[in-house]
Length: 122
Image (cartoon, rainbow, N blue to C red; front, side, top):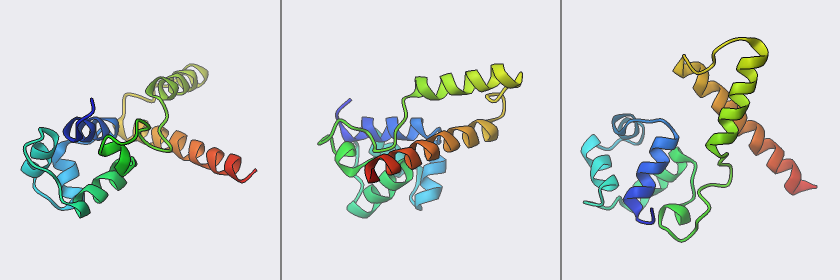
C-alpha cells in the first residue's frame, strides 16, 4: 500500500469517515476525494495538508516517504482491547453507538498523545 491513493483511503477508513464527510470537512467535492483515492487525480499542496491534518498523519507518510503512519497512531488491536476490557468491567457495550465509540477512541488517542509528550519532556 505505497501509493498516495491507497494511503489516503487507509487514513480515511482509520478515521471512520465517508468520502462525503471528508469532502465537506475540507471543502472539496466528493468526486475529488474519490479521484484522489483511485489515483485519477492528485490533490494540490494545500488540500494534501488539509487531508493530513484531518487524518492526523504526516505528509511524508501520505507521500510514501515514511512508513510511520502518524506520530500518535494507536494500533487498532490496542484500541479494541481497551474497549473490550471496559465493556467487561462495566457490563456495557461501547461499540453499539458510533458516537460513544468515537468518543472512546478519541479519549484513548488523546491519552496516548499526552503520555508521549510527557515522555519526550523527561
